[in-house]
View 1 (cartoon, each protein chain N blue to C red):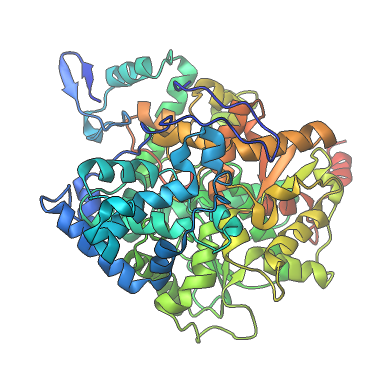
View 2 (cartoon, each protein chain N blue to C red; view 1 turned 180 degrees about the horizontal axis):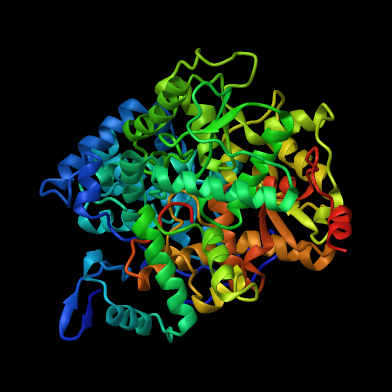
Length: 110
Length: 506
């Protein structure tokens, strides 16, 4: 399942996670979001940017709890809860947001 | 929403209409060549797959006499036919345990019995063809190895052994499953299923310490790699990451703190799960278990305690000793290994824990026995301890508890629908349908007794229900963990109570 961005083909695995993290761009994120039926708002970008920053430091996506706390700090307590994060990313803030952020899918019993 | 229709929830005991071939399309993603090769399996289907598969089958039959007995013993009595949650949820007759077994039994007869070699048409013996192999891949990934059928089989035939053997054979000819094999590779590379590196693990634990102190005013530690600690806690890595799992981890930490014991998590063995059991690989199961033994030896601990993970407890309780034992370096004065529920229960029995049960008053709870704990292991020192002990812990922390239908609890429990290496998005239809028998039993007590929440002691069950419950009209947080309840209700020494907080705020 590959993506087409600005006439370039970006490879992805069968679940839509890109295989080369270096090929990520904001345009690609918008393209992935369209296939996920998500309209990227500033709040969506806040989550995606946090995930990418966290990944750069720790080589893994943050726990949902850590993400919630960070969003609480940046967007306020009414948005810093998992209910709001699931409203933004119905398939889960970890898995779906990671896909849009160009990060590998968290695996295991999660 | 994925393209399938959920079954109508039925009362326990109701049987669906047969729907031939309704799940024939269901199969998980294949493991990529690099995931296969990392575990010593061929990257893709080998040319001589037929001969290799039969040779491996023969090897397994020699190694596991039980499997050979199961192959021969079935008398087609039919007792198992309506016992599998995947049959009950899908109506596909190939999900009847006897039919699933026969996918393999017909090959066994053809290649390993006198009658099947010479008169295959008389004894239902069949050649191993590519079509048969594809059917194996589909239907042996529609068994969560929960072993409910074996409880009802008069001969005790265990379908899990069939599905483990079939998956082992398929791995050896290059037909592995992505979900399990990628995860096992991560355990070897990074130390856990999640792929959580040491630095991230450390940061997560520190973060939780801050949260607990903020909430309770008590400095509860979640120590990592502490040399010379008494207890090594191994727990599913989902406990470091997912909801509601992480609340259970906080519960373990609070109990350890209150008990005043020295304990540690290990970054080397930051995983209790052992997915090698799901693919039937003794070799891989031993390698994963060895990491835990090595970590225990390196840290010099005296005890190993296992967190809330169903199949990990089966592996630890039943297989550790033969796989990587002896564990004679641990203190024989305690169970080896010990379940976190046993640890907490022991403290409750001694009266060393104080609970404010009203902290869980917003819930009416029921207990979902996780299959590997219920049917494949024990807790405590008397039969049925695996049923009694977790319930005793739950009841010590809450006021409202109701059991589900007797045919769906204890050894008769239904699988959550996501066990046995099937907890993956590519099998979501199977997971959703397979959860319906449990959801039917839950709905019954929800309607009749106002039950609001289900409590479990397995990371797979927790993740599965948080995904599936919303499909059936419940909330994702209607599934909770045992030690999440403990965490809510446990009163730590020196803890700020709600009244005090109000005074401070006021």
